[in-house]
Length: 104
Figure (tube, rainbow, N blue to C red):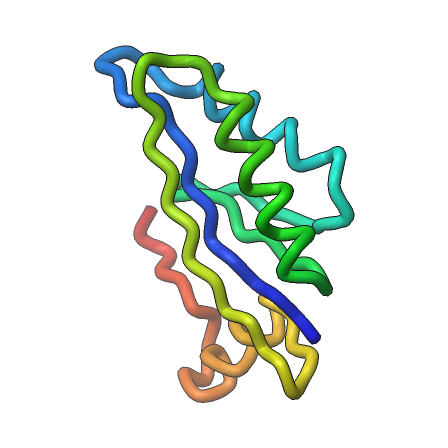
């Protein structure tokens, strides 16, 4: 089994959220997951849906604030193992190029 998820955890506040988001990302290190943070969230990969939920809960509770917004999108492949990078490679194969622009 391979579980890939997009996790976004942030306090609801006007000021910069960087320090609080860093707490959420840091909390993931206590779990058997691999992850990569991007500007819109953190992509997490693991073999267990339970481990994903435990890691997401830890990330959510690590953030301080009166309100915390958490979004978790899960791709739970139950019959094959496929990594997040393989999913991107498939798109790039069909594009015939990297799946990004050089404009920024």
